[in-house]
Length: 552
Image 1 (cartoon, one colour):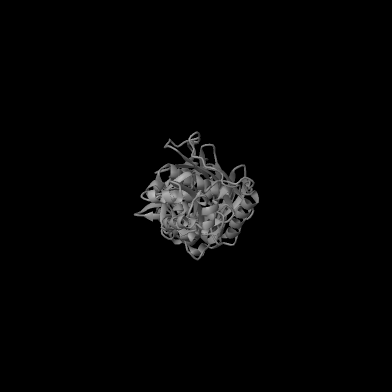
Image 2 (tube, one colour):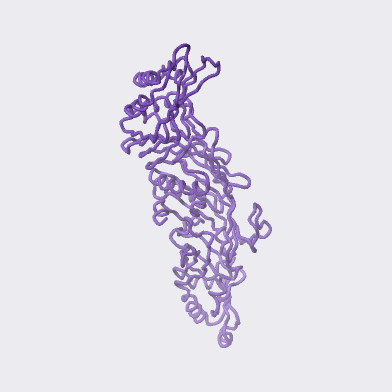
């Protein structure tokens, strides 16, 4: 379930967070009915594996106690008649005594459900959510259902208690009955952690629906236990008739199940509106994740928000480090790999990019979108250059990277990005004499694909050349707007030089320039991302939840 650590980021992973400052990494998600169900199924497994418990299989932490005398006037008339018959069977005037029904360790298990995951409120970095589930195949269980009588007016002056216990009662609900179960969640980004909380489990509507359709419920009881009771009240001795009591509970199954459910529903509504009110569940996860391979990187959750359309946005700070360091908040604060800003992305372009992602989520074209800035992509490229990953690809060629190295631009909309390389071209002896130089400097441009692929089960991040997009204009004029000069326009026999350069450059078509092993992402959602350029200075990747879970 490692994928959930990453997939939870957008859940987990608030009014819309500020869109005025472009973020390194923005993750967005929006849940519809279908995607909610897929996500919640995986979330259940993740929570169970992290000792959080399954929200769709809960046990009430405290016994439920119902004072039958107080409940008598509130329950339906048929249940009143059933209680009076029980009184007669017990041969005790229970209404002159304390008479309780006690349910120990009541629990429920949901076998089938349709759920919708919705944002509720959002403020101060905290986002609240509501999961509304329409459940089928429900099962209610208890360790015991106890009918307890306490007689106070006794000869000893001490109260006498006796109990009839139904052991391991189980209410099996037909799949024909659909009931509503609501869960209230909250996520918060704390200084050191990401916190997921389950604050509300509301089974009030569910219990109300069960009371309405007892005909769709089967009740199984493992056994009925009764004490040996002989009570003297004045000159009269009262004894339990065990056979009579046993027959009462075995022959009146319909009344018994309805009676128990009616009593619980009438007297426990407040408790059922949130059965974990006194013991909410919390799970702390690290808010900082690291990558340690040929390059070392850090992801740090910064903000979470949700807007009125239900889109959840997570903003992540990402950077790369020159060396391996321990994971902590200020990881490699003084050792970050920097990169030169090649162009300024207008804030309106950033906002337009985010709006396009929102539209695709609202129109249900995707469920998850990851958007990364050019600056972050270029930090990644700079880290791969510094780690020596490019040297192997350029080995044996006449090329080596110049002082401006390499950088990526999302300048055209499509499935490729522009990769610019600052090239130092070493000339041979004859070439030197011909052109009058020993070395040339010029930029080249490739159209590249950025993607993850699994190789022998291990995720790899690949930068692959899809098309050579280097023309004579670029070679002769350079790209001064990006700080890339050229010396090709200063040599003799320019046409022959251009021809030789094109022969060298064209060999890169189809080449994988960077192959970066990323074991930390093994089994995660991100290994299925393929980025495209939005033409607005950002790379975007989208996924539907069907794509995420089809192989999990």
